Length: 281
Ligand code: AMP
Ligand code: MG
Image 1: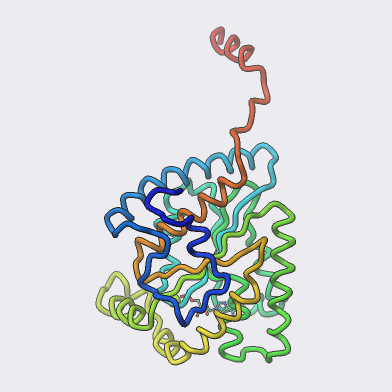
Image 2: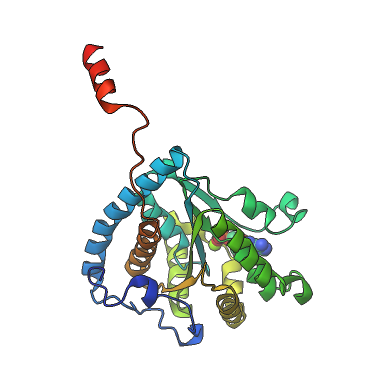
């Protein structure tokens, strides 16, 4: 059992059968400790994650095609950026392929919605991070009728097929949906308006989006129901407590990397011979 967890995080956070409407966004499912314990553990586990990431990177440099892709979805203020900064920020930046997806550019609109996603996929040995993703094309697009249902409806199956292709090519997908309560979102948006160092994060349209909360809840539910697959399951993270969501994503990434059973790549030279040469050099 992972320290302070009564359930394995992968099981405690698994989306299967979960109704978002019933989710306690301030909960800490599977975790027994309080904030202080959580933060302590996060520091310890960040070191573990960093070590595993270095092994993944080393293997990528020596011909192993495997990689990891963290997909982050969540409403504004759910804490996606905090995951990037505080969880991904604990590993070597050269091993991270980061991409964020906003409103498609004019060029992107000329292409299939997966076009920009394929271009941003992580290289071998990298941890890829998607801050928003192809799932926007069944979330914001569905909620705002940006395309008709006959266009977005087939996307769920198409996304599953796309992700199967990625897994077959050696990618381990870690899909994370983060949920804050409507009240907590209000607090966080207010903080953005109260603090000069946060104005830049504020977008007046975020307030309008709050009217669509139930429609988003529904779109998220359908997304989880239709695209949480055996090979690429969703995890649902209650995100009112930032320390918990950061700890949770750290644990999910550690689990994904441990499942790869990585070793350090062996030397491709004769070690003794090289030592002799170095002594004489
Ligand atoms: P942010 O993540 O705060 O920078 O906001 C990015 C915005 O881009 C969000 O409002 C997303 O809903 C929006 N967005 C992302 N992908 C798409 C898409 N495929 N179509 C329309 N809007 C999108
Ligand atoms: Mg935003």
